[in-house]
Image 1 (tube, one colour):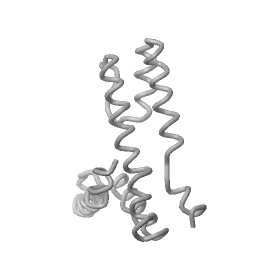
Image 2: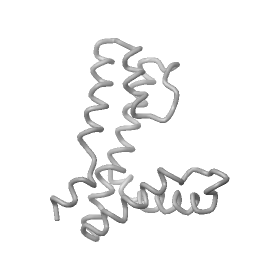
Image 3: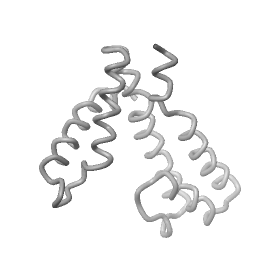
Amino acid sequence: SGVLAAPFVAARSLHDHVAAVARRLAENDLVQARQEVAKIVGRKTNALDMQGVSRAALESLAENASDGVVAPLFWGVLFGLPGIAGYKAINTLDSMIGHRTPRHAEFGRVAARLDDLANWLPARLT
């Protein structure tokens, strides 16, 4: 079951992206650091200073550690592989339609609330 669960736990890619930001910050290369952090955040990065880039990378690391590692493992411990798959389904629904758009307003709101509930305790454990 551990082999089947491994694809549901995302840690390596996140590490690589945050490490790339950290390298650019260590080199005092703000332009490249902004470009690297833009790959992992959903906001504009062209006005961020060094501290802002660092903060954005750490916020993304924390959120993605919870969503990609802690929460799947949490639900896996409680319910096994079905718990992990169920969590990932909820998380994916929120990512795809959880935003309030006219087309998916009601269904999207349900997906977003389910994701909030599924992440509440794992986020506090992160």
